[in-house]
Length: 157
Image (tube, rainbow, N blue to C red):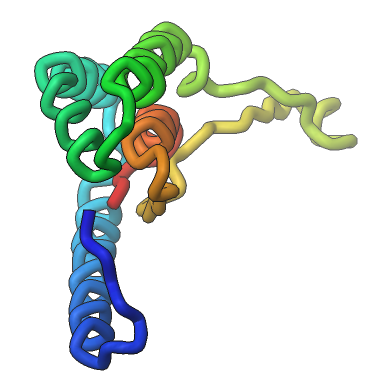
């Protein structure tokens, strides 16, 4: 884990560089979202599957990195809180994805209903989302929110 001395002007310059890079990434993702539109059901399921595979294939690397950052953090705790708690959320998102993406019927306002009008709500992605996680559980909140946002929204930084 990188420790930043906020009183050191050199570190603040680096933080500004990181902020500029973050804004650049968000701008690129927003331009991509505007150009390509919302991801399809198949693409979202593929992303969730790849995320699940990535987590399971690298779970020991996650745990080792967390142990190195925290020094004395239990590997079992890291495995339980930052790895295995993520998978049910991914499975839940995949199971409910079609329902979440489907249109929802509504009653049209009077007098349009009398004229044969139909109304529905079409759920669309919101665009680009930036996520920040707490330092003490860096993996779980990000990945959990990523799986949720991947289904509902579009691009995450």
